[in-house]
Length: 467
Ligand code: SF4
Image (cartoon, rainbow, N blue to C red; front, side, top):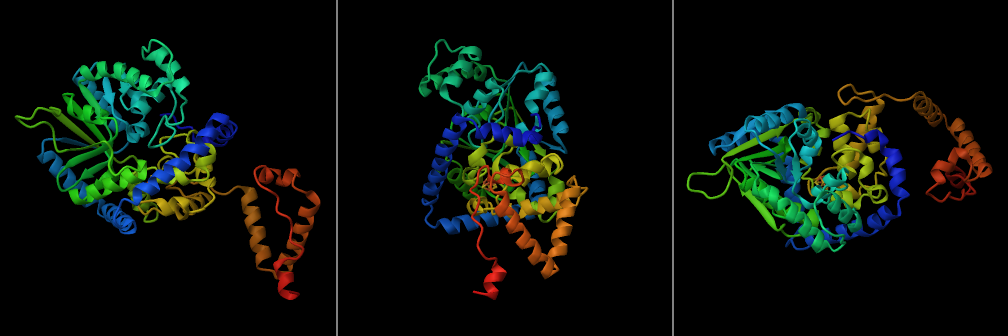
């Protein structure tokens, strides 16, 4: 997937001016947040459930190395082949070579953000291997050649008439329809044929269970189960933080993931598999390949402050409550991850220099931190990234401050340590602001979407002196 994080401002302006996006964002995101809240009340003690989930994620990340080794041992014992990929290139080449070795005519995929991160579809396309996305949302955006809009619903914002048009154009639908049932049937007709002859299926991983070497996936459509059970060769791609210590923890995190993602107690399908098909079993692949991807996560792990981001379970709850996402939607983030988690993961994986607008455009309102079942403190990490960028951090590829930023901070530090200078500057500032007014170019970018506050007749210091 192409990296377009530097078009953030342009794309955000486009989305804010689009009436279709506005209607969707104003209506659906509050609905998604509301169903999450209702879902969470189905825990006997929601606060205790969240606390337990946060503790599981913290300890899983703290014990990352040990748990991954245990997982590998148990997965291999169960018959899986485990490949450690240091970066996207190694993972893509492994899959491409597997496809070529077995002369696979096409591959099918279940929904996975990790393969978006890898850019796997583009690599297989160059290899002349067609890729069919089998999740309905992913299938729609693949046909439309659009990036995912939301972690949970990649095509959740696409109007049905646009889907109808592209299905007629590229998926063999006979006549136009905006009926969701008809559209669903058209996708099913198209994909069933691919499923029937599938030889290699690729899926992501929601959780990898160290104590058993098992892979767990949640979904509502059954396509992941198809991709895991029907083809002769199955590839599961996981980022290394997807590990949990044992089945008990995996099941608690599954309950948490489903409620936070879609408000469901459990999704329609929860698939837990250990190794490939055994003798006498009817379903399952003959070969199971598990790719454990690093792609910069060891570097994230090494920094005690950024390590916390690896606790994420990709539930999407933070996205639905984010006031910035509610204005601009998912496209401006320009890469695999969107919303508050995208403001952290994209910069940490791609570098601070080309993602500045992502962690810059945050109000630090803490809504994301409040809902996060994994215990991630997004606002404090965003401040950390901003500081690292200004300090030109070499590990995170910080740019350093501009001349104007240095001048401003030096001037502010100078004035703040000299009360007289500060007072004079404050008076001068309020005088100028009252003379310039809200439409002056110096302040108009700020007042574009905000009401210019009326200036107080007295400063705080004046009030202290003469209350
Ligand atoms: S950061 Fe937290 S709320 Fe956001 S997707 Fe990850 S786990 Fe869910």
